[in-house]
Image: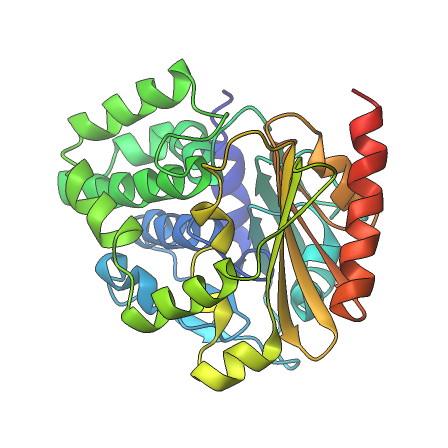
Length: 327
């Protein structure tokens, strides 16, 4: 892995203001990597602001050391914009304005290059890495090595959480020797792996579990049991008074079902507006997501669709059937 410390800080040195951001429906990789990078910048004497869509970040409360975070508004303008865990304008939503208005853009990501890629003055895209946090740990190794132990430990905690998120606690197909090597490096920095696991992976409210349970009750099987679909509609979120984007993906709860080619989870964030998460150990679901402007990884990707539940499920089913015939 190339160390980009000198290249990155050459750009940072010239910037009057710095924004850090990630994809829509932020997760424990992109957002937590923002925390880590903000700490690295802070330790080098540079202020930065993490720009969100206004989502609740309490799930990361155990990692939040008074970060500077602001919800996006259309009047914002930053000299330097650093995008993490995303390389496509389509996955930034309205925050694409941050990139368009910036004098300098940096993209750090571990997804394959997706539709409508973001042009950048400095770009590092390495799909072989388990998380963008892991990519940060390697690509800014010289900057991190210069920090005091407490700062290194905090960054190591963040990086481990990004790996937990994108590997589903070392259970996804991206789990390999390199991931375990990095986990060992982080352990030598003093992380408490069991505590981070409990704080991030086992910290569910009763309301979240009710939301998950009601969603699991919608399971349907297609193609002689090879495809599992489930959904959470907008009415459920309204009834329970929850923001579904505050929770981990419901797909985590069905990835142990045997005999499947693919899982599709449909979450209605507004009437007729569906976010679809695809998971598969056999199919290239990134290619399926790309058909609709989405993206991600070969075995885990997402997309957005509009329409009724029946319409969007029919569309995804046809796409998955077509993909399965390629095997």
